[in-house]
Length: 111
Length: 116
Image 1 (cartoon, rainbow over the protein chains, first blue to last red):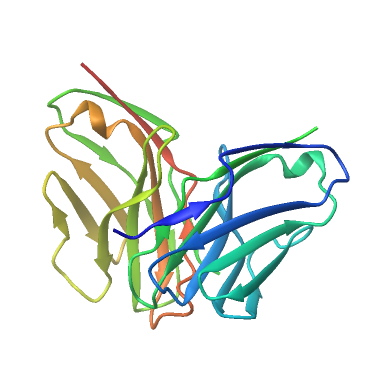
Image 2: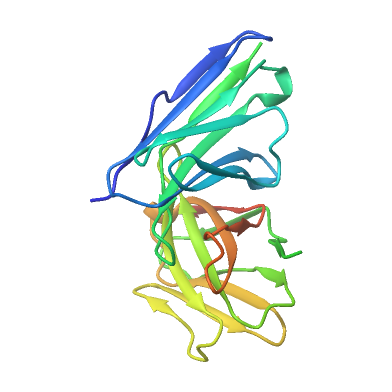
């Protein structure tokens, strides 16, 4: 079974803190994605990566950065967390043209 | 730019009945993929069904089937014999083809509640 795991299910951080969200997949997928899910807005793509050390901006990259040093791991970084970044964050991975698999999500609250 | 619209924020259905979730999309592409994803409460998002735009035949997966109307840019999901385990958020999604790093564009979702 494909597994996409995320480092935390729930996270509470203070405004201005640096936040790391980690995602690991075990199926040797080339592509990895970070989405943000908000009620009434669906899922919006923040960043994606199609290879190690490669990244591309999605639809809402402002305030976020990413890192992919190894094929199986894709990190989302909030350099200085703000309250408007309180949200559910979903990681996903796939091989080109194949089904996209999602992690369980991290619910981040910034106070 | 492509957009995906789900006009039903919430729906409910009684167990064993049939329900249809609506999805429309806008694109100038001729070849693409459409998906329905299911997100149960506090559980991971999973793929329900996938349709390739160049295929005329509507996709079917057990109790789940789609009505794909390419000219109308409509892609509805029909759930037959609804079960309590079908309670979830359902997202319609679009992907360009040939695969452009597999970026999915999602609708805003429909929350489906199945009642006993």
